[in-house]
Amino acid sequence: MNNKLKTSIFAGAIAIGALGMSGAAMAQVRLGINIGVPAPVYVAPQPVYAPPPPPVVYAPPPPVYAAAPVVVIGWHGDRYWDGRRYWNRNDWYRYHGGPHYDHRGY
Image 1 (cartoon, one colour):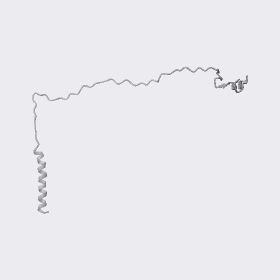
Image 2 (spheres, helix red, strand yellow; image 1 turned 120 degrees about the vertical axis):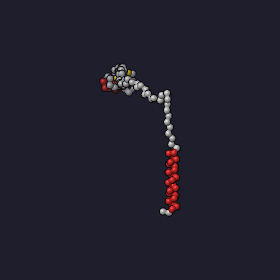
Image 3 (cartoon, rainbow, N blue to C red; image 1 turned 135 degrees about the vertical axis):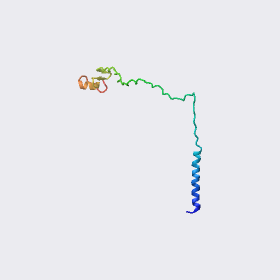
């Protein structure tokens, strides 16, 4: 290596060392003494105990009672209800026997 390169490396090392030493040179040591003043002390708060919440209970809904529809067996206008189906007059008389009416209902 030539002399110029060695000098540059040495100067760079000295510069880096000087920068590192300047931070250490600025370090300070401080000592504080409190006389008659108590130091702050942390005191934990007292624990609070609460009872557990009551259990959740799901009750079934109350039953609903509805009146059954009233079914009246017999004639309802021009139709007869026999408990299963409505019959018109011609069908009723044709099925059960009796006076036969024509399609006009007389």
